[in-house]
Length: 156
Image (cartoon, rainbow, N blue to C red; front, side, top):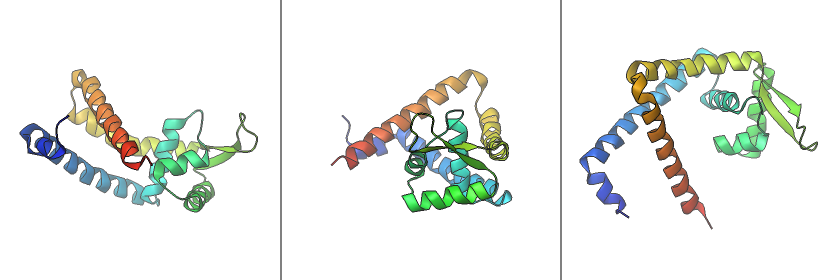
């Protein structure tokens, strides 16, 4: 295995790191703008996007909190706020009567689709159709590698 600091000195990896940094900055800006435009916080929007990806099954509040790295109390406040705004609803979990599942309402679905359309347009503009599967595979691979490193670092 290559030492981490050796990878940073690789010109190809250095370019990837810089491109990723710029992507993170632009993602943050777009997320903040798209959220504010709709009267939402960025965490609100992140949850709506997570729920859109979880449909039609929905997600438990615990899963939502883990995805967003929120405490139980913060997750409950977030769900309450988005439910008051009409963007989500809590439903009984058919597989576990002790729990609930969170689902988007039509309003929440519309917000998630509108926000996702911003990123879809950017991918459409920047990535040729023939390259999209390869780019998706690379992004999935980076995500998987980061998840493995996170698990290793937090294993106790």
